[in-house]
Image (cartoon, rainbow, N blue to C red):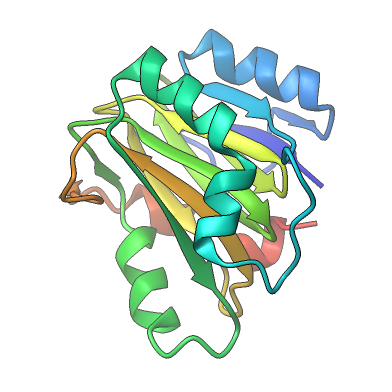
Length: 184
C-alpha cells in the first residue's frame, strides 16, 4: 500500500507524519512540487505482458506527460528477486543524488521507496502499483528497492541517455530506515 513518511532531516527516528491515504500523500508531495498520481491501464495487462504492451496500455498517460513536461523517451524496467544485478543496482540508487532532469517513474507492479531530501525534512514515499511519482530536477533523493526487488516500472526521460546522476557525497541516506523497515 502506498505510504508517506515525513521525517525531520535532523532526526531519522519516528516520522512526524505517516499516512496511507493517497490524497494526503499527493497533497504533501504536491506542496513540495512533487507530482504524485494514479494511473490505470487502458486494457488489461499481466505479469507476462511485454514492455511494448505495457507502454501501449499506458500510452495516453505517457503521451500526456510528454506533452506537459517535454519528455522524449519511455522504457520499462523489470526488477525481480533473482535479478543478477540487483545488489549493484540497489547500492547505486541508495546514495543521495540529483539529476539535471525530473525523475519520473510509474509503478506497473510491485513497489519501491523514494526518499526526498527537502528543506528541513526527508519524505519517504512507498510507491506501489498504479502510482506515478515525478521528482523535480535537482531534488536531492535516493531510492531503495529492497534486497529482494520485485517491481515493474515505466521510466520517462527528457534525456535520451536515460538515468544520469550527480551524487552529493552526503551520507544522510544511511541514517534513515531502509525498505525492509518501512515497506508495508
